[in-house]
Image (cartoon, rainbow, N blue to C red; front, side, top):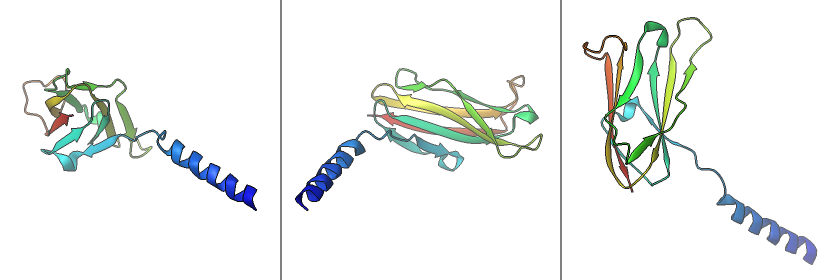
Length: 130
């Protein structure tokens, strides 16, 4: 009986020790968070998810970011809502807190060749890196 209790204690200690090793998930920000301020720790990631439809010619363009404070990570992802041709989906942009400070994050949704036209949509955040 003592061996079983000792074994359970060792197992419990291992679970507690390993729980600190679990990878953190990205903090996710969506269009509902437009205009808000978010705080992230240095090294913490922030995912911005924005709905769009590339078949229309429109795409999201990030800008206005202080790259000394907030670094955009490579590998923008797009996942379609459907297998139907012409359907929209979700763009995901990843950022990481690089150094303490405050940075604006602005996305514009427009056709890349229509730079002088007003964007169809905009998305703004303020990110504070601690």
